Image (cartoon, rainbow, N blue to C red):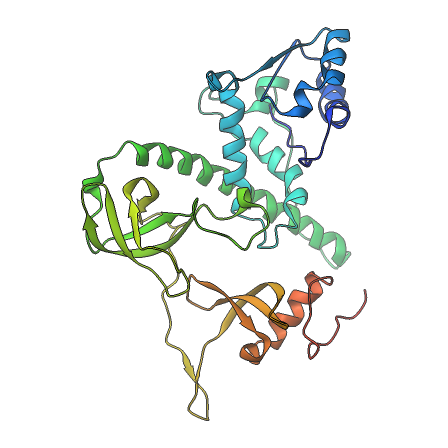
Length: 331
């Protein structure tokens, strides 16, 4: 059974002990043993003395024996994949996802045991059922119920996809490079590509898909990259994965741009996710309808998307706002 507990890198030994008590020990009692990495929070004199007084045996992984913490590391990787499907670009909503994510994980069947963590611990599956809407109920309550149901369903699906993706990563590292050929569409691992997003762990781990233009030697390929990626287009096969038929990874077809009455070409904005001040001008981070790329655009390029910009500022009232964008009404 798992518990997903939000914290920060600044947490010290006292903070960790308080988290243990608040989120774990009150539910399960004191453990006989703990397994962790060698972060300063876990090797502090405070936590060492606390463990000694509470008769808890701490065990830390080492650089040479990472298997000590292997189960935890695999779970951490799974959780990162899990949340990455649904966190916003600004990454300001992941804490709110944790309770439902934890419930969905513990109520999902473990491949190794064939049982859910809930059943393995308690001998039953907890109830999670939503009844039909009847009559004119309180709208705010009905909306909250629908949010719970949709969130739970999405996180269950995300868990399945994340488990499949971890298997895919493993298989990718052990496949023959000849599986990729010129003309294929491939995903590119973005581990060496700078991102505008604040937390790299929750940013998308791969971008694309991109067309393979040429095979370079036995272990590398040249890709057709968009002009916004100003990087060398040749990559080792370990960073590439074929675009398959998985419905979760299919991008939308690229539609033709609209033509305005004045004869100008106009592209439609699909989403607005962030804003910044660049060289004295306010820019917005947008996704164009039908395209995989996100780009920073000045406000003057987005005159056909006032509703999306207004909605962005309603959701993020503290974000930088262009002077011509009206302030969202207070609620």
